[in-house]
Length: 243
Image (tube, rainbow, N blue to C red; front, top):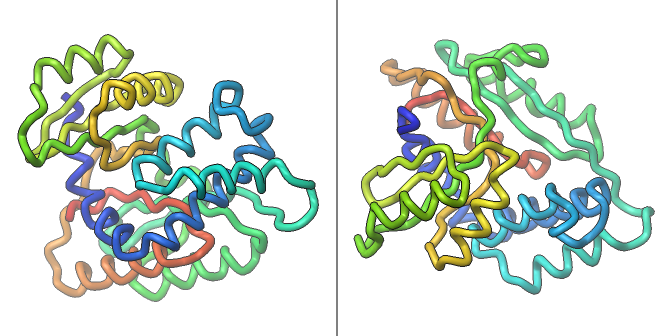
């Protein structure tokens, strides 16, 4: 088993995604366009980065037409929007570790926004690597079992045979962990087998978690995460805040 359940930490984000689906689709489309331009074309069979983003899009129920349009736009001329990937690291209230993955066309604007969020809510933005050492990069596929129809032994066998490293059951979901290199293969096999996904992407999994007990810290942490996740330049926010 993988230890502390990651799904508990992404439930809040999942709810926010459901409420802001259009914005999430826009962010995924941007990631897809960049993956096409950087990764070698619009065929996911020959572009691992694109395959990973498509897996995330499908798990988020992004329509196939949206996916197709994003790929076609990525295959377009080199002019127009130009984005770069930037990762920011820092600490929230009481030392909660936070990693923000952004994709921006204005580095100064995004850096200023991130620094403001950290500072305003009792944290501070650090240097590259200041907290990422305490996270493990893994593929995580969250499978919906709310109706209880999935046979645990069958799923475990299917996932392990596909190349998964670990499977964990948490309430009404199964969490399938993979190495980043094996993620696309495992995702494709489980998707073909018909398992219902709640999310599927490469994530930064905390090695340990911080539980906040002070009400002010809790409030500040929630506000900081809300602002970060709502920022148009932010693709993902990873943290070790135990919610």
